[in-house]
Each structure stands twice: as structure tokens, then as C-alpha cells.
Image 1: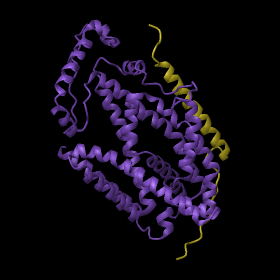
Image 2 (image 1 turned 60 degrees about the vertical axis):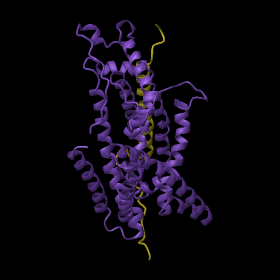
Image 3 (image 1 turned 90 degrees about the vertical axis):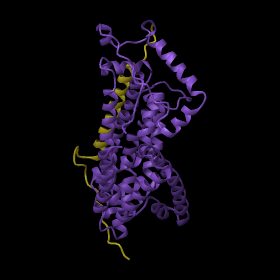
Length: 50
Length: 364
């Protein structure tokens, strides 16, 4: 059985214009998430002072 | 289980299988069965990728991990978004342009058939073992809830999954994953709401946060570098990234998902959805575990969750001694001068301290 020929579409992202910019946004987003988690950890960390 | 519970559970199972089969209808050719004829939208791929990575173990054991060890496990996922970016830029176009049906078919193109065969065998063995473990966790829960033998619940769940997978192919699997992921998210929100609602009325959400923090359960980020510390930001970013690269870049169960995208862009968007949603989702799952820990400061936790095992423990000679020791400790802690923490609202009010609930019952 022969399968139909498939064409490979490589399209630009639906926003931000280029994939490089999308990847940059994801990395910045990760940095923001980690920063918020760090703030959260520090805000509720057990106090060492009596 | 009440009649409505049965209706909801079996109604959901029938809907899940029927919907998967309906979506996967007409998957007669290899291309349709393995690649859904390259028609899957990015959001379905993304949710399916997330559902494939998650299992009942994620929702049972991860919450338990936060209960015991705090939220630091979330750092394990910090490298995942980086891996998604790398794979989107490299592996996704390679797999698409190679026009392969499986991840391991690419190895045959790149090397030879022996390499493909070896990796395929390793994958099938490891995935078979992993699937067995992933299936056993919900089977235990179902056997407890339904009172059915463990093997029966495994056979029912495994049978249903095999049914819609073999009849509907990847399209049925992906759409069933989308449904499951939606239900899982709703269930997580409900579990969180239940944990919060079972706190005493004078314990606010902020009090609960302070309690969890004081017990070291909200330790989401550790910045110190320690070779002996399994979960910190560095092990998460570096180790987690390489683990995610291996899993999402070479594991057929994941590669198959993004091979179904109608374009390279759609597959990339599916992976990047996972990159954006996975870390907050894991944080939320762990946070539920931390809140359940706080809840069980006020509600007596069950000794064990399985009724059969609980009966065996209660029948043992040591049980009465343990029980009396627990009551002694509880009454000692309940004494006002021994109480180490009291909610601010309760300190301000002159109302008497409500009795600590000593029972926890599952809905029957």
C-alpha cells in the first residue's frame, strides 16, 4: 500500500513575527515564574529567630 | 458509593471511550492511525503531551511528596521549558522533514535497522514497565473506592485504554487525552477547594500559608548548590533540562504526539504550550499537598487509606497502645500552654476553641 505524499509546512508563528522572539518570550516567562516562586519561598520561609 | 457517583463514573468512562472512538473514526490507513493524517491542532497536541507526561501517580504521589517533603520538587521541572525551546528549534523540524511515522524510524534513516530495532525494544520494555506502574496507582484507588479486587480494576482500565487506542489510533488517544486533562485540572481545583474548606472556620488562607511555611512545606526554590541535594534550582535547570530533552525528544510516547501536527509551527506551539503550563501546574499540584498537610493539622489523618489494611492494623495487638499514646499526645498539645501556634483570628476572639475533629471519612 502506498501512502500519499505529505508536504511539510514551516510557517511563521501566529504572533511576535519570528520563532526566535517566541523562544525568547518563553525563556523570560520561565525567569519570571522562578522569580515569583523564589519570592513565595522567601515570604513564607520558617523564621530562624525566636 | 451513591447511585449518582456510579452514574458519574461510568457515564464519564463511556463518554471518554465513545468520544475517543468518534474522533478517531476512519483511522484505517497507516498515516491516519499513526499520524492522524497530520491534522491535529496545537492545543490538542499540547494538552495531550501534558496528559501523557502526567499520570495518576502525578496526582497521588506528587501531592504526597509535598505533604512529606515540601514543594521543592517543583524545581525538577525548571529545565523543561528550556528543553521545549531547544526541541522546537531542532528536533521538531528534523522529524517533520524526515517524514517519519515514529521517532525510531528516524534512527533507521540516520544509522541502520539494527539501531532502530534495539532502541524500539528498549522503549517497549521501559514503557511497558512504566505503564504498568502508572496503571497500578489508580487501580489501587479504584479498588478501595469500589471495593473490587485490584486485578479487576487494572483489567477494566487497561481494557478501555487498549480499546480506544487500537480502534481509533493516535487521533482517538489525543482527543481522549484532551478530555482527561480537562477533568484532571477540574479535579485538582476541587481537591484544593476541599482541603481549604476543611480548615477550621477561624483559620484563614493566609494562616494556612503561614503554617505550611513554618513547617517548611513552601520551599519551592532552593538556590544553594549542594551535590547531595536532589532538588534545587541548579539540578532542576541543568538536570531537568537534559531529562526533558531525552523524554520529549526521543521517547516515542511524546514524539508521536507532535508528529501529528499539520505543520512544524503547530507542533512547536504544542510543545511551547507545555513549556508555559507545566511548571505552574506542578506548582499547583504540590501546593495542594502542602494545603492537605495543613488540613491534617486540624483533622485527624487516617492511619492508612485502604480499608482492608486498616482493618488488619486495627486487629493487631499493638493498635490499642498506639491509639492511647496518640490521644495522650493530642491532649497534651491541645493544652493552651503547650500550643505553639494559634491563628490570629482565634487569638483576637474570645470564642472557645473548637474541638479538633478526630475522624476523616471518605464519601461512601
